[in-house]
Figure 1 (tube, rainbow, N blue to C red):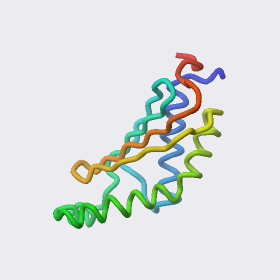
Figure 2: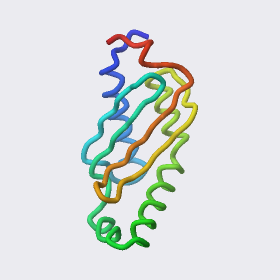
Figure 3: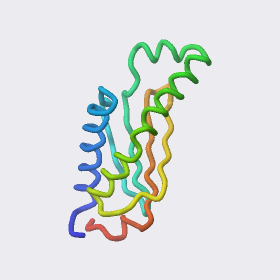
Length: 122
């Protein structure tokens, strides 16, 4: 593969932003992708709406927001895995995600079968 690490990270960030807008109806304010060994770590900022922040003021509301947001992302996981494969040529072994209701940040980790970082041009 002759694509640079920075180029692939940028392409994943752009594709994830497009997926969010197409699938969830709105995108995050900023997205940063990092490739580390056999992992692709994506940090999305500004994903919660003002109404969701208000809901998060109670424990029940916070749990409801986390549950619904996680269900939405999980329902599109096959699209996300396909997107990673198209950009990197690597299959996703596992998918992990969590959302901070404090900061409105979501972290997504795609665990790959191979060490992608080792294959890339720096």
